[in-house]
Image (cartoon, rainbow, N blue to C red; front, side, top):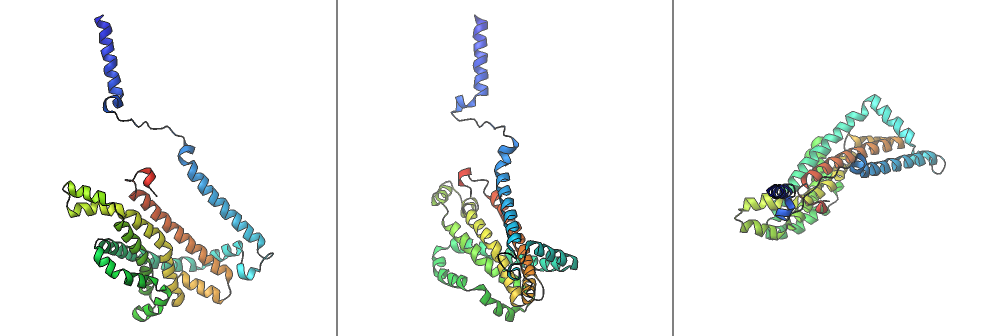
Length: 294
């Protein structure tokens, strides 16, 4: 009889050890043994669909050129590839791409940094923000191409002018999205941190900054193509190198393949930069619940 009771006690002890939900009332997360397709099948389908779309578009373009529309105005995908290959052999492609990359990256970094900092500071000062908001919107509404001649007078036609033009274009997009993110931070979280004895520094770094990160990253995503636009506008207005210069030179010589080849390079740069920002977005939002992530 004692042996039976002892076995029951051991079984009960083992059950309480292996089943913590019985003691704590909490559910246990059991990892799922998913296969390769379960983990990456969605990404494969998305990227496969994108590849099919690009292939169909290029094949249709190649077949329709010369039949449905004039090649002089649209060129052909094969002609564009040949132009890229020719520029690569001549050294024009990389040298001009590197110039534009420097302008885009420097303009993006300076503009995004200044926009994020200004957005955090001004949005934390509601009264002052309301005072300067109309002036900021007025400056943001100015066509950036209209600023190019003024920047040429101030800074010349060198690298500095294109960097500043790209930075100004990026600044307003990042600033406005960051300011919206700061102003939409949950006030309940701020009050909770203060009730627990948190200081202003704790509120800023533990609530405001993480809460506004979605707005900041949205601004960065939107600003990626605009940094390219700002740099290329500067090159189109006044420059003797860069991808904008290649577009201007090709258009002046009625080289449609050259124009499309430059656009392909610009699109590739924008895609890569957008992927980098996407990686930062996923890492910055790891603290959020799955349903709250963008």
